[in-house]
Length: 382
Image 1: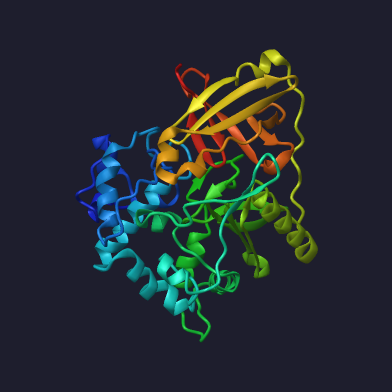
Image 2 (image 1 turned 90 degrees about the vertical axis):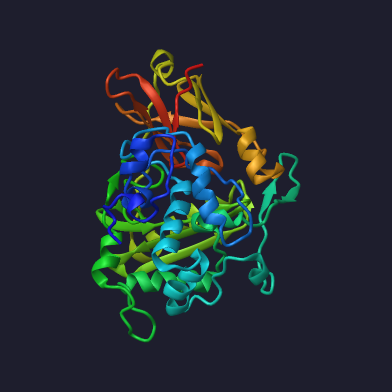
């Protein structure tokens, strides 16, 4: 496959709201999250082997938020389209292709797609601590089959360590076989799109999320589902990796972040410098205040003294796709601005130390969006 080729070279039936985008979007833009259409769409297209084909047909209904290449914005829909490319190239359904090409050769026997396979093993369910302190089991447990390329895999911690070792060994598996070329594995860990200040990292490779701590490259990519959060971080130059799996929100991601930081400092002496925010005048902060919205989130930013306060609510469309347990509004999040930039850092709570930034229209210079949880959310005209 040619990563710079248009997607239609492999999926000629692709139809999108913007015909020019459908003609020109590349395979690489699917993998580095720069395709620009609505990304958090979890439409269930059934349990059949045609689930991905039907999902790609459905993508004609997704809004094109930005032009391809405009900004890195984590895009689950793009990954399901990439899964459909794998089906077209291999002639197999996605899960079978992945099992034969990757999972079995690497020895990931406990990395599974289907609930019927998972339920024959011990497995965890997601939870949420409610405001009254009670603990609630979150449903649904699994994604729809159309979401398998987005994040439908369930894995054990030992399998995640094997996956890390495979990449740290540059594509070599346990018996010494070079399954993929070392050049390809290393290329995956090089930047293909930059996004400085994003919580994803400062760049995206294929499809790794890349950052640096003290000049040392850090390669990561976790994942999440209802109440479940996977932290996965590698430091290739030290042949080091740490895996952290949690199954409760809202503090699961915070635990993963802190255990990662502890491990990097304790084993490698790598300490990520905390950004130092500054107080801003209310008039300055008012520039950022307002509503931001996309198909999955309604984001309200208000001025709170010398900083900003942010609330995020799921849209009814997202709740309809993910179930009633997705109808959860977190407590307000405190955003504190960094000096002389449009970047911010969260200073407390379950999102402590999360980073992001506001974007500006390149022609007018006005704030036109917020980069939140690795996603671009445009400013609402209302």
